[in-house]
Amino acid sequence: MGYRQFVKRIFPYLKNHLGKLVFTSIMMVFATLLETAIPEITGQIVDTLFSYNRANTAAFSYSVILFSVIALSSLFALISISASSWISNKVIMDLRVNMFAKLLRLPKSYFDKNTTGETLSKLTFDVEQISAAASTIWLQFIKSSFTVIILTGYLFYKSFLLSLSLIVLLPLVYLAVKFSTSRIRKGSVSVQKSMGKMTHLLDENISGNDLIKIYQAQETETNKFFSIINTIRQQRFKVDMAGGLNTSIVNALIGLSLAFVVFFSSTYLVMSAGDFLAYFTAMGMLVKPAKTLININKPLQQAIVAGKSVFSLIDESPESNPSKNPIHSISGEICFDNVSFSYDNEKPSLTNVNLTIKKGETIALVGSTGSGKTTMVNLLTRFYNPSSGQILINGKDIVSYELESYRSNFSYVDQNVRLFNDTISGNIAFGQKESMSIDLIRNAAKVSNSIEFIEKLDKTFDSDIGEDGVTLSGGQRQRLSIARAIAKDSPILILDEATSALDSATEKLVQSAINKMQQDRTTIIIAHRLTTIQNADRIIVLKNGEIIEQGTHSELIKTSGEYSKLNQQQT
Image (cartoon, rainbow, N blue to C red; front, side, top):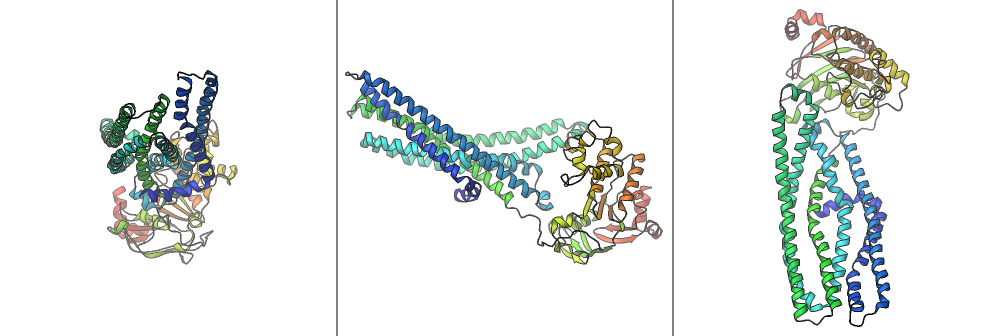
């Protein structure tokens, strides 16, 4: 991503604030104009108040003028910086909102390919890098550019020949900037990638803290973290050295210029003390804006690199949702018609699967790890699309339905329960918090046998459960996820070993609740423990992505096939 492309991409986030941006720029121009008047004022003060013929009557006037110029310049600068900060933070907010909204609409394949840390780094570190370019760098550029232009013009006005002789140093400054640009950009890319790795490692260690302690992996993980942050240190050092080398070269050239002015003006030119002080002060005031213009290159290159990362996320294609045709209720059969699928064109996960699930039927998907059970559910819920074949519901291909309304027909209970840092009621009414009544929430808690522990909490349904339900036991978390599925009241229920985290007594109660919940619903169970599916209407046995057996528990036991072998292994 080049500078022009970066400006083109960031402009839509700034166009709604153009008025404020123009106002900010004008305020900074006023501040700069007043500030650049200081050399002339100081020169006149020296010539007028400190000459042999002192004009003491003008002392008060000059004092008021000098104070007024500095005070007004500071006021305009403060207004400009405040407005700039508002714009910058608004741009950050808008970018993060757009990124988060896109994140929630990305296909599952994106999360399979990108680590959590890399994605978090885009939303945190990379966006902050862009914010500087959104307004801060622009403001610095305006102030420094106007200062350099005005003071350079002033220097030529004071002494054309002296100023002309200093221009020979400009090519050296240009070469210094060009040398550092590529090094800074390359270094910023490396830092960005390493920050993603660091964020990912932090996420793993925070979420897996218990395992790290149990397996005594603290030293190993600390060494990993040290290796990454040491790499970041080295990479940032190289970037800082490139920028520092620029600054040093510019400082040396500025020092050479000042020394030349002192020598030449005192030896060959006839200048009054006031004129010399004004000229020398103007040159001194040129140092900071000149250095700023040089150093702007570093954060600008970092912002461009970060922009490439941020906009790559925003540009990601969302989940395929070609149809606007809503489906409010699934009332017919589910039909897998010659469905095949493979992840990234690798070994097929499903091959020519044909299966019809009747309305209200309970089926169980059984098979060893990698047999295709989860893949079938992922295709049915449209996390992926079949490589070939189609899945039909109500006689139509599921891709012909609008995605959000289609998924509203599913409830899902996973063995790896995912709860949110919210209240009990917020988790039960997840996605429907504003519209679901407390009576429905309470009823779902009763059916799932969650009401027992909820009413013992200090704030009952308004109790916060912490990150991922950390304040609850495994069984309580599982029952809460079941209550969430009950509250959604969807026609299709997907259970992935939903009672695995429960003790025997609670499992019986919850299984009874699930049995009630299954009435008048199509239920698909991903089964690991065969004892939980013996009452299923039909058991589908998968192996290497193909259906090899199907029937009831008693029918399959009699065949002495794959299901019978699996059952014997668990008894």
